[in-house]
Every structure is written in structure tokens, then in C-alpha cells.
Length: 286
Image 1 (cartoon, one colour):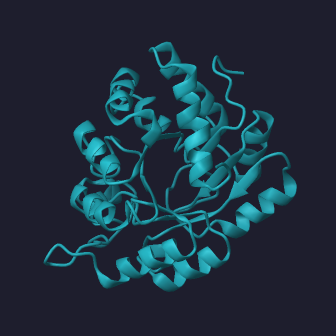
Image 2 (cartoon, helix red, strand yellow):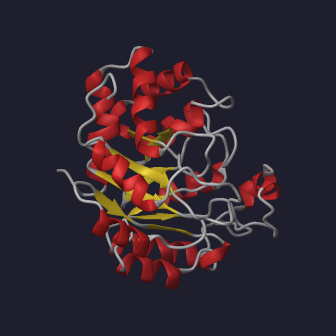
């Protein structure tokens, strides 16, 4: 057990294997991720795959593991047809909890080299047209997420795309900025940009994978960002599970929270970010 009581924690960003597009051995499969979370007293996890919508896998894991809620999701990458309203609508009908806008197939990840590192070909998926407006299919996806009362996540999109989506959806639905401040995938948002996105209505996700490795901001930097944004608009997650080089997701969240506590974060604010806020986003709490 960790130093902070995390009963009722929620991990909105839990990878699992197998997942061929990432190309690395995963630290955990879906049932293992759910079992870890149940053993540690978590309320819920959301399974994320870049390969396919994870609803059926989440359902199967839920049948095997009691004591924790297991949700699926969909990433709008090449492997579901990109920003594909038909695929998104099907996933939402199958009770996907989160729709991620393009992640490793985003134009941003082509620009920053992540796509090439993973062997992903193509120019990348863009959300904006030549005049800087959201493309029609993006607007259709936003409408579907709102209609089904699901969560929209920004994925690995550019800074400009983050702000365009936040202006359109931040006050209309539940929006989560995906692993903000990540130095690799995505636009590596600054603290000030995170503050501005929160002011537009987004919750800012800060993941363990962002700061618990050898790259990216330090734990102290993350805590300063939390202070600037405000714990009420922050969710803590892991983004673990996609490689054996990182902890398994549920134990990893415990370690992440402990690291923040050791740097001066209070138990109440940590529970707000790791338990209360993500539970409210999933409609599991008032």
C-alpha cells in the first residue's frame, strides 16, 4: 500500500497488451490490469488501445474480475479509419467511456518524430482545415461524444488543435487534455497553456509516464503545475502498461501519488485528483 490512502482511485489511461502497433511487450493484459486495480481498492480503470476499440476486451475483463469497474475506449487513429464518426458511434453504443482524438497517428506525432519511431507511415491526421477550423468529421465526433455523454480526450494533437477543441467542447461536454506536459507524444504543453485550457473548461491529465521516467518534467515541476492549474481541474493517471520498462498501471498510480506526496502535495488534493475528479468524469460520483 502507498503512503496516501487511495481507496476509490480511478486510472483513466491504462494500456494493456497485446497491441501490435506499439511494438513492445506490454507489462500487463486487460485482466491483469483489472485484477491489480481491484486488489488495490480502485473504483475503476479505462482500458486504452491504439489498435482497436477496447469495449469488448473491457467487458470480458469485467466478467473475470469483480470489485472494480472496467471501461473501454476508442482512439481515432488510422486503425479505426481516423476521425471516423461511424467507428466512434459504434464504440459509444458499446459504452466506450472515452473517445481519444488522434494519438500516435496524429500529424503532431509525425512532426515530433513519434510516428517514425513506431514505424507509422503517412502524413498524420489533422483536426483543422486550411483556415484553422475544425473539420466536419471532427465536429461530428464531438456531437456524438456529447450525445452519448462520454469523455472526449485531446490525444496527441497539436497545441492549436487542443485550443480549437477546447473552445468548441470545453463548456459543452467533458474534456480531458491527454498527458499534458508530456515531452514525447503530443505538443508538450506549457504550464500556462494548461492553465488556459483549464479555464476553457478542460480537465488537465497529468500522467505518471510523463514525469516518472528519465525524460520530461520532474515531479517537482508537475507539482508546481498542479498549483498553477488547481487540483479541481487536474486528473492523475498512469499511461502505463504499454511497456515492461514501466510499472504496471495500478501499482504505478500508487507510486506516482506517493512521489507527489513526498514533494509536498497534501492527501486531500491528491485524492481529489486521483479519485474524485476522474470518478466524476466517469459519472461514478456526483
